[in-house]
Image (tube, rainbow, N blue to C red; front, side):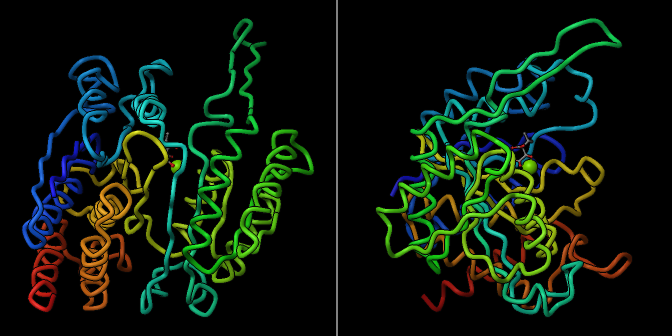
Length: 361
Ligand code: IPM
Ligand code: MG
């Protein structure tokens, strides 16, 4: 099969980690007899510097005409003083919107033997395997906003708005995801305070009638934040609006120990978008020590969700698990000062492992 993708390495550690994910995709394509076509384009700060636009037209066109998009990361301190529309993050938000990817899937798993990465006690984090389904194109990220008045007495506001169809479409995705897992769906809101949350709860409950096999429950976002650290292993699928999902997914990442390991998939639109959740990490950019596994696992999600290549995806995920089980660790996965491998070495062992497992296919 022909696998046509656009890569957007972006800023900070984005280019370093994306390069290794592309190598893994090349090897996988080779092993399974697929043809991989990769077009690389600028996004975020890199695009701002090159063409004064965080999402240039030619980048968007390339994305829209490919089968999937793999993104490294966007953002950096140098861009903090740019006006809102010209920030790297604005490019990412526009990309999500243009691709129509309203459903963001963020798994956070504590692999056996990796409990010590978590700041929590091993017996609390052990067995954690949660999937966060985050609504990605609505709510306060895209609602009406303004800043008005004179310096010293200015007012600013952002509004969190959701329509019934917007809630319905993401609810269907969440129920289906839960159906493919342990069938426990927790819808998270702030219905004790917010109108948008009361509507959310009502619509989700209604959609739930179509999925009698999935056990739906509801919780407030504050109490969920608490439960996520006190009993993370009790969750299966957490499903929530855009900003709550942004916050809870970082928290879930910290709970299982390394943001560097976590992939994400944004789906539901014309073209899927896949990115690690760790961000651009400007403090370690260019040093060759970033963890490429989050991006490699995002590439696996891409093969699964955009190309329906389940075996190919699973073989990459297995290679990553094996490499971690064998004790290979980038710097983010070890105690401060302990020995670790470079980005390049980690990429190499994953490729080796992938090829070795291919022999057994
Ligand atoms: C994320 C990030 C983005 C978001 C930023 C970079 C705009 O935090 O993907 O979680 O808030 O969605
Ligand atoms: Mg975030």
